[in-house]
Length: 285
Image (tube, rainbow, N blue to C red; front, top):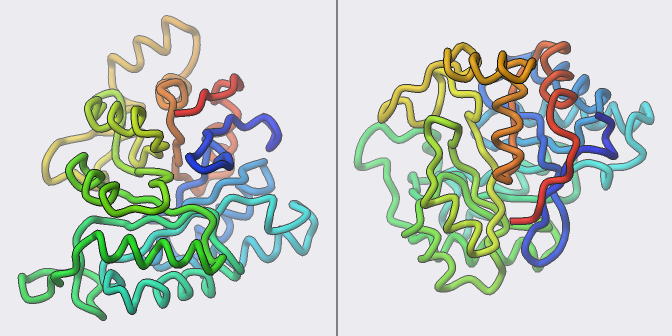
């Protein structure tokens, strides 16, 4: 599959997002630079990042080089997503958090900027481990500050991540700009049907993280999720259709429809995650 045939998702308010992205979460130092560069060389145009991943500078280096080398003609040929971390939820810190990600990535704007979680930490706290490190910042206030990023031209679209229906409704009640996307964990054994259908019915695109399962899934404290490529039922389905478990999982996600951001630093798997996916265009949410 070439870059031009990657399926897309329509976003509310206009614009389309490549439905197959390159995930960068939990990549080891040094690996994400090479992985991102290889992914773009192989035709990926959607890169999923976040401030808290602590590897935006490596990804930014890869982006700068592929543009300089002519792999892509310009920054506009790429779709770059990043996320506002919880220590930047205060309205006076939202812009700072966004600019820090943009500086690390070496870009003048973000295509999509997500509120990473619907809870806030006190400024300077990367990971809260006690109640006194939590901050009382309404998500409505943080969202309004994110809308100003769009007005300023720093961000093209804004959305959320790991939001449940109740939290989506709170944002919708005050939003002057649409929620473009909700990124959350979902896969065949954790389908989140009610949440997915709510997003569908309200024009909110869905991006799935942890769509292949695995021990590092964000909700591992609440449910087990072994690597689904090793699941016997997924394996039986793949064998029945003469394909691989990866293809089954990719197809399940794309045909819901939603965007998927599988992660790998192995060139062969990076290419397979894109090329094995169905080439038919994904319908808008």
